[in-house]
Amino acid sequence: MGLLRHGIILGCVAILARFIVNKFQSELPLHFGGYVDDGYERIQEVFERNFRDGWESVGAAFAVFVKGRKVVDLWGGYADKQAAQPWKEDTLMITFSPTKAFAAVCVALLVDRGRLKYDDLVSKHWPEFAKNGKENITIDWVLSHMAGLPYLDTPITREMATDHKLMKEVLENETPTVPPGRGTGYHSFTYGWLVDQIIRKADEKHRGISQFLREEITAPNGIDFHVGLDAAEKHRVARATQSTILEVITDIWYDPGIAELVRKLYFADKNSFIAKAMGNLPWVDVLDMYTLNSPAQQTLEQATAISIGNARSMASIFSLFVNGRIVSEKTLDLIEKPVVNETDYVVDEVIARGHGFYYYPPRGRSEDNLMIGHPSLGCQQLMFDMRKKISFAYVTNGLKAGVYDLCRNYMRLQKALYDVLEAQGI
Image (cartoon, rainbow, N blue to C red; front, top):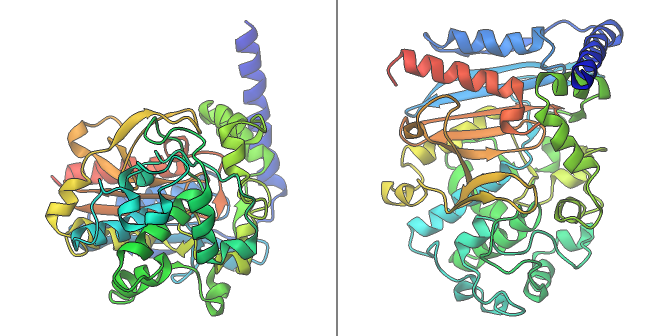
């Protein structure tokens, strides 16, 4: 009876929360744009229903490419709700953790060109890295969050973060917190600096992640995606907003699993892996203040969480990737399976990872339809399916308390997409 009573109370609070939000939030007209190909109308209906049902209260965009062709390109809501600024076709948004997947594409391109191999020791390309217990770390261990460096002992200032030579020295002098190769633990910020240095060492021109991605992938294909945004484009970036307490309560009512995620992130012991990893850059706050709204932070060339794009540009890059226009089928075959599938010691969840990506079966469907991609806290999501040759991405500036399958707004769209594909025999 105690659990039932608490459930009833929580349900009543959730209903009251919805009433208060609807009653007192500034009423702005619903705003939608974009298009869908014939046969994909169901996805547009679901996208708009997310807003009508209150599952999206600010702005969002969703895009799908099937076998190299854009079939869905939708946006809606507001880039800045307080300013009544609608989300437009060219609106950009911070993509957060899917940034790591774009860095992984750059590594895959270097693998495809024979500049490195996934099983190479990092020290083969970066000899100075081989000290303090890091001698046996492979490139795939870095990409699979198995390098034992989920956070840095050295305090990192913003000035240090903008100096890749200084960060190189910091990484060389670090000692792993966990023995490398003994498990996977989310390298929330360190991943970006490690991969940037690997790219600089393996690339014949010694370009960093921002320049490499721009010159090799985005600029030649006219794709509006950036790691290190030009300050002149800052006016196009949607403003990230945090869920209200009332919105979190309604999300928990819908899926109680969100409560455990909130506990891990906001109430973790200060000495835990997750607290140290998330707090490694005190001047970057992705939980409360969303300091990444600052144009100064958006210009950082950091391949962990600070890329700027939209659903269209994210999905278009991976449409090229999955259809063999960035790397060969031989290289795609290398990344088809995860490297590790076990409990992550930082986030305390079982995760299948490898080569810079996450691996998922579509919910309720066979393992044959394996999706690969990268999720983010807040419900940004990037996915591609190598067997179906599709790619899709979702971004929102009304950031939620969930990740991937704890994001009801996104999961509703993913289900609708696979239902449509199944109906079309894809």
